[in-house]
Amino acid sequence: MTSSPLVKELMVCNPIICSPETKVREAIDIMENHHIGSVIVVDNFSRKPVNIITHKDIISAIYHSKLDSPVSELIELLEKMELITIREDAPVIEAIRIFEEKGIEHLPVVNKEGILVGIITGTDILKGLPRFALIDPLTGLENRRVLDYLNQKLSRQKAKDLFVLFIDIDDFKKINDTYGHVFGDKVLKKVAEAILSSVRTYDNVIRYGGEEIVVVLHRVDEREAVEIANRIRDHVRSIKFKEHPEVRVSVSIGIAPYRGSLLKTIELADKAMYQAKRKGKDRVEVIE
Image 1: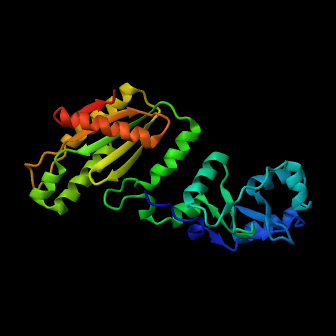
Image 2 (image 1 turned 90 degrees about the horizontal axis):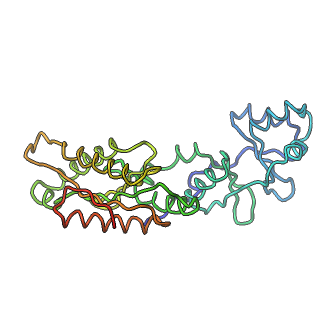
Image 3 (image 1 turned 120 degrees about the vertical axis):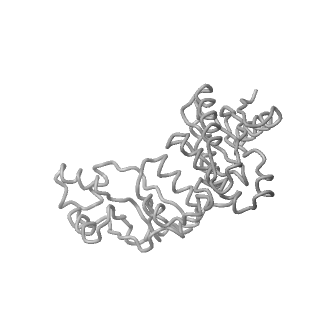
């Protein structure tokens, strides 16, 4: 599995700052003048970040008549939690995890000495992350980088009502050998489209390798997982190609319930897929 890009590759350098002694009204002016949603509070001597002021905090300052108070007083009044930061050499996937777990939108970035060097937000990640970092360029599906993030997330949440589908295109090597790899790539793209049209927007569809695709189904039971798998199978079977109308594509699908580890569950779903292959292909099998 390839590694995630680093925070320092996507962060905004030289973030806008203020000191604990800065008046709240001045902090508002700073945010307005720079068109930003937060300002980092930095200790004058250590140059280390101590907290962050956001638009939400400004609303509270107005309510409590603290516009002319120092930022430090507002922080104390609001009992803001200890500032969460991230190292510049941390993987971006770690920043995404913090955003989701802590429900925050701005993450100060520090170097190994704890000195502020930047800031990263969800918007920065979406704008700056190269498309190929999390997306397979051929199919448009998520790639295997996503699995590491999902595996950590699901293990922490002790996920339930989750199933994995392991999908393999039947006789794909024969298609490549007969019609060439350019047409084989087109088949793969069409299968990916069929799968995406068969699942929900919050499910994960990941190109696992070659013609293998993994689908992580959230909030489903076994009956619903089988229904979705059969819907995928039907949609794939309906694919037609103008240049080769004789080509018929099918998939074999293995299903496994989540077993505490996403990677282990994928292995189980893979075994179920091979059961489907042995029983004649173009079918769905649930792991026993």
